Amino acid sequence: MSSVLQVKIGDRTESIKILERSGNHLKILLGEKEYSVDIAKVEKNIFSVLMGNRTFDIEVSRSTKRNSYSVKNAGHTFDVQVIDAETRYMLNRLKAAGEDDINIISCPMPGKIVKILVSEGDRVTAGQVVITVSAMKMESEYKSGKSGLVKEVMVSEGDIVEANLPLIILE
Image (cartoon, rainbow, N blue to C red; front, side, top):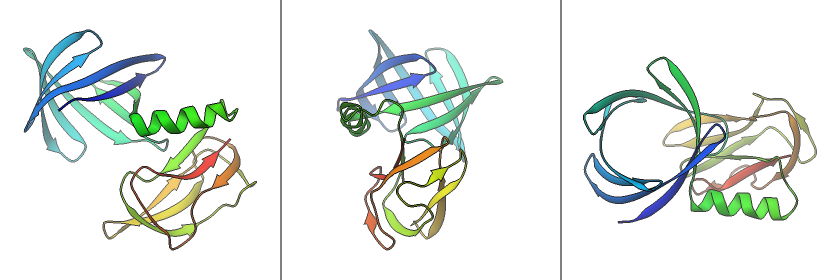
């Protein structure tokens, strides 16, 4: 098994390559250094991470931006974005089209579009609910991560969508 992710924390971006995975145990390459990591879910959104002889208790919650999370450890909070191959592709495609400051709203799991609350050209504010998706017998509201204009609505109400596909693009 070998998958590569980039993780962005603030202005710092690091590559993480998963070399091996067996249950909760991972062998990873972080930058140029190899680590052995054990990760156990303690309760909802809380994980215990054993790396070397150090243990970290981490609380992870999803942010409004695509593949972004708020990570709390030892009283510190970090905004973390996981940049996988699909996210890199979408960001590069939008940047090539001249979009430097973009926000892609997507759903992390397959689902059905229940309600679209905005149209192309609408002005939205940060935190405004823009779309509702039904997934795993639950309805989730997705909010704009910033104020701006709706550039493109890529779905219609009633559509069935795959995980992590762009639903709404803001500029």
